[in-house]
Each structure stands twice: as structure tokens, then as C-alpha cells.
Image (cartoon, rainbow, N blue to C red; front, side, top):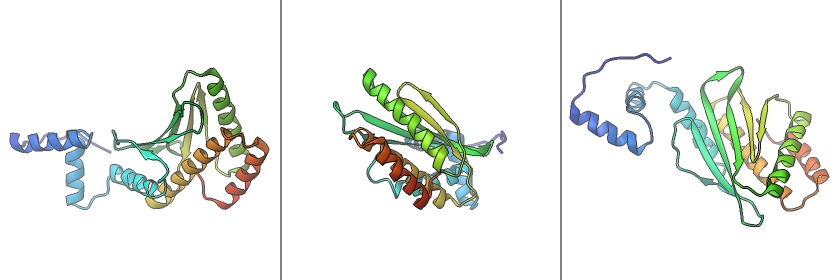
Length: 204
């Protein structure tokens, strides 16, 4: 919960805060809140989200990590072994507070106008969602649009490090299967491997 407070600060201090806030792609209020929280050893929602993202980054070396523009988002990029080498972007958006048992949403998108690539990508997205409903214990929701899939991230009652690892494992697995799909691995073989991975790997 946040409230509005009035503070009297010197212009010199505010100028330094604004410079740092600009560098960190955050707001003045958020930076002041973070500084005070660290000073008084308070754990804010922004700190918890950063702990999740730090845990994710320790697992996803195969991705290019894009510059973080918001405290509640982490964007990653991967390249497909397909003509023109299109890039896939994964953006993990976390909620400050769980909403309806969901902790956030994973946005997956590929920017292309190639109709064959878009059709193949949608086929993979829907096949993947079907496998998850079949083999993963957690329930979630999906949204599809051309070149995009959004998957809600279920809330898990675990610490931030474990949660980040679970999300990182999921994104890594998804990217691996997507690349297999465009490497002409058969859907039957992929499903067999997915069923095994779902049983052996902690996914979200």
C-alpha cells in the first residue's frame, strides 16, 4: 500500500535524485521510496521483484537481456534458426500484488509480417498450451494474437529465488522447444520430451 506524503527537500538533493532516477529508468518517488526502504531495512514489492529477476538471470545465459525500463518487467531476446534470423522477445511482467492467484504475465512475441511464419508460430503456441493443460499440474490462462502469446504466471508460495528459478526454467524450456519446432523436430517427439520434462523439472 502506498500513500501520498509531502516532503520538503533541497533543490540540490532533488536534482541528484532526478539524475539517478533517470539513469535507473524509474520515478523520483520510487527511487526515494527505495532509498528509505534500504536505509530502514524494509522489503518493498520492487525489491522482491528485483530478487526474482536476479534469480532468473542466473539461469538464462543463452538469452540477451534487454535494458530494464521498469521495476516490474524483465525483457529477454532469443534468435530463431529460421531464414532472416527473426528474434523472439520474452517479457516477464510481475504484479506488485497477486491478482486472482496470478503473480504476473509472460509476454512472448515475434515481430514478422511473414504469413507462413505467423501461421507456424500460432500452431506452436496452441500446441504448447494444449501440452501444458495435459501435463502440468498448475492451471493458467492464455491469450493469442498474430505473432504473440500471453501466459499468466500462477502465484507460488515460495521465496523469490525459487520463484525466479521456476520462471527462468520455464522460459528456457519454452525457447528450446520453439527452436526445435523450427528445426523440423516432429510434434510427436516434442510432446514425448515435454511430458518427461514436465515430470522432472519444476515449471510454473
